[in-house]
Length: 256
Length: 276
Image (cartoon, rainbow over all chains, first blue to last red):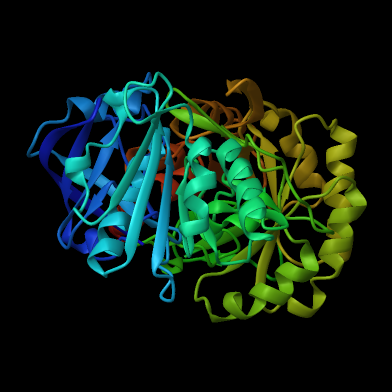
């Protein structure tokens, strides 16, 4: 983990939200999809806590974060930042997704805003020659990931709650047809979806083997080193610190 | 050099007035980037209880203006496992380490202190957090019970809002130094639930300064250590001016390790300049 000042290079629209591209070669070189970056916001002591982001794009010299529209004053401060600003970043935090070397067909499942955090993994998996399917859900078409942001080889399925794009309904409705195809599953969503995913895998594959599905456990971190113990949750058979054991876990451990 | 336990035959000599407060670096191994044990004169571990504690379920953390509330429920693996896992690390450190001992009953702390006999060469002292709700008799009994079983320097961490009330009793009962102190508890809603916990972050500093001002006028025969809300060199110097011999940080190390490292360098430079 390092602490560094990242240069805000560009602000871009990302669906209904804003994405910030941050140049920080030393940090970007260490980042693995699914890991977190903690960014200081505000000019003084308010907000005091750093904001937690899982980058939506990573290259050798920079990474991008997504700012959804919400009432958080730290993210509101970031939305006002202009190119040329320097942001204090701490990261990478925790363990990211591991591309299963023996898996050929990888199913990536993203629920709501968390789906965006799968983009760096989708890019890497496609570049390495894996067959990748990305399935996401969103409230409406406006919140979905534009297909143009995906490698051309990636198969893309969308479900929207209002039916404005793809299948009407939630992501879980797509699972029965997609799961039998997949050698490995990578997911970023909420706990409700992970429970549904666990049940769907059991139904499709008798029992979910350890290592078959990885899932991102999203939460806000304070220190990112395990010292503060703010992120301890009941997971993997005990009360454990997500910043050290996660934030990417085996789905079996999340549901245990 | 500063002696935080001048009346204890073992003494507690530190080479910098900056202390890593309880849990700032976990048990002395969870250092954030750019911050090192050598930045501090003393390291105080995260809380340790006689038996393992699972701690509080989520939510543990709530953000408030200029600070936060954090309630871990003293989540820790218990004394035996902490010693088994960390004594080797402490032995290698050039910075002295004090253990923060917590317990439900005064007997728990005394039991733990008695079990430190085999590692007294590695441990520089024990911190005893005094609960917010104790009366004078209970505070004195808690310190005295530990004093009877260990020669190690005792650092009594007093609740900031009751420091003046408890200070003299703790010194008479055997505390070698007073940490001022434990921030007042507060409550804040999080996602439909509540976090009830001590304050953390810069919002605590005014409570610390008030307690230091109260203790300054009491002619206590024990060093005072300031803890709570210190973020900058100016904050630290204010505490030293008010009679503190040393200053603890915790939230600064978590939030901005680079700033904590700068503070460590600056406070050493300041002390060197004062000495010359």
